[in-house]
Image (cartoon, rainbow, N blue to C red; front, top):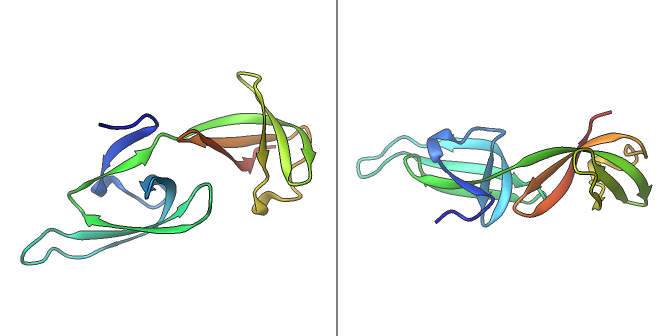
Length: 133
C-alpha cells in the first residue's frame, strides 16, 4: 500500500535531479553508480541523494530491477509578506493562505518583503526553495 504523498517508481527511472524517498525522507538525487550484473544477480544501483528539508546526505543501494518510493512534490508560488530575522511570512498566491517558513542559509539576506518565491511541499512539510522575482 502506498501512503499519501508517495508514489512507486522503478529504480531504472531514477535520474540525477529527480526526487526519491530514503529512510522516509524526501531527497534530491545527486549521483548514481551502477554496477554490472554478476553471475548470480542483477545490476545494483547506488543512489546518493541530499535531503530536501535537512540537507543530509543519504545513500540507497538496490537492484536496478527493484522499485522505490518517490515523494509527490507540489511547487507553489508565494509572496513574501514580511521578514523577521531568519523567518519569512509568506502568502500563497492561489489560496491566499498565510504561513511562516525559515529562510534557508543559501537564501539568507536575499529574501525581501514583496518578492515572489517558490515553495516546495512534500509529505506534509514545506520549504522555501528559490526566489522568483
